[in-house]
Image (cartoon, rainbow over all chains, first blue to last red):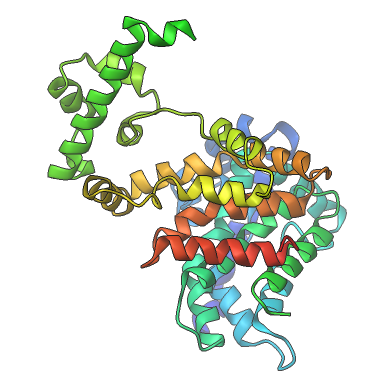
Length: 190
Length: 190
């Protein structure tokens, strides 16, 4: 993508990053509910319509600097895994490298605490995962040369719900590993 | 409950049933989206405010004749199970006796088809189950004399998501049994 390296693309990335940084700072200072999108736009020196162009999903989306298509990124992580890695382990590793499991610097930890203490933010993050259900079901069916089935869909849904559950535990990464281990045993994958 | 047998209570039950029957008939005739709650109230000869007194959760709730507290009913089913039944089997039997698994008469089957082809109705039914997550987690912890944990919460959530997944399968009851069997194996309960 030649366009991706141009001035316009760099400006786009910078504007998005600025909006994200301003939003996170204001949310941390005053709490998610007490900050309006109009204030964020104002403080970032962009028009409100511009904010919604960059963050069409609205206020909760502002906590993410990037707007990756998570189903696409997840699919890529599974497709590009090393030969000795099974598909489910690739999904687990992909999850583990992201919120709320990435071994964060203090700044990430504050953002994480903000997300998991703010119901609309937590709901937004959860949806980011669970929206991948159709994609993950199709992907696993393809990888394992199986027909799509209720059992496979259940596995996909349960895997994608796991981060939301694990995030509440005292040791989220351990909790995620435990849930994945249970699912592997249950679905005969170990 | 002496009050439960009085005239007022019988009238209450009758009004609720009438609203349910009218709503289901109109939804089946013209589709959920093309029927307003005002029409339903009108056709049932009650004021719109009365309709919302009986169905405070609104239009989707009208598909249910009864307004049982599902977490409470589920808890009772587990507490009152026979001695040879384990808690998870009691949950499975409770689910199996309800939508979308009850071996229905033709009328129930039509209502089922309506629910599972209408996204807002399907979402409503799904919520009826998933809202039981806290109650089921606490109940299983108590039954098994365990501390509440991420693993136990995961099991509860996955169990409660199962009806929504199984309902899409060609043979919903078989799909539910399969998912429960996988979960039992995974959580070391078989």
